[in-house]
Length: 89
Image (cartoon, rainbow, N blue to C red):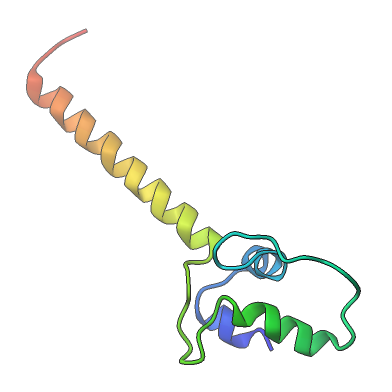
């Protein structure tokens, strides 16, 4: 049931998030307990995984990793600019 999500790079944390939130970040509304858990899980994950097997949006862990990489790139660029300026504190 979860193999396709794990094949797309999901972690347990991502699965838990996907069961409570849609791919656009909106929370799922909890009205009652699921009648058939496997179908409920498949339905919730279908908001994240396309019928072709791709992701609708990056998993939360992937999104945070991309944001972190972008931040490191900005910091590296600032450090290189500072080093090139020759200013000494």
